Image (cartoon, rainbow, N blue to C red; front, side, top):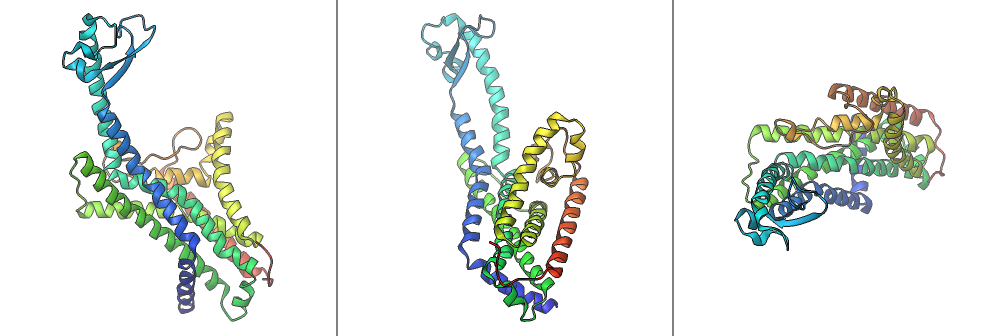
Length: 348
């Protein structure tokens, strides 16, 4: 059976890489993941080059009846020309203090921005974005790969040739899961290249050597990859239950957004719902992605959306819940595929 499954895996991989849709979706995911690097870099450059400060007229102790803009670089140099037109030059000293406070705040903000678009945090941020888009990608690919066989009427033809049902379904899932892993590897490598470029443009030296760096990156790639599994299982179950690719896509993607909306609303209305939401797929996926770190301390933690209110479930809790969903939905999908008769056509 293992040899037959391996043969089917090679055949499914050949079919997948010959289709345009996977490559288009992968390119889109890679482009979106680049926002994790280039977005903060652009914000860093804009903040670094900003010369003006908007404050209340007359400084902190004045009436605050209107807003004015001052040129901090000129003011700190003692040049009253940096003050707005009509301003009292006596106020120069007060505005200098405002600008000193701004420079301190700006230095902190710039350091935080720098950490986001430089290694190693940029990899975690890119993986977080790719995982969010990857959920949609794997749902589409899973439903298309499995559900389309019903619509084309090819499933019955394949199975009557002696292909085992479990081997056939397993080969499709192995190929889809492998594709998800390769996507995360590509996202991480692209983030490294972009981080080296942006770091060089900003004048920072970065190092990507060392066993710890490689090990942390591999661990974070694995974490982001595992976060896709429940949605592969969900799309598989919907596709097989409805014998339709469209139903598989709509079911998995609809659940993803539906849970996000429902959890946010119901957690705000009912305090007890917070505990219930801690056992939902999307919320535990967010909790699991929160464990992406790639550096010491809070500055290295990846930014993910907290669906609902309160703290995320623990990392172990999220892993067990997600693994449970994968096993249960995967088991039901295999059982359903094994027991249900296959017609010659239908579905869509």
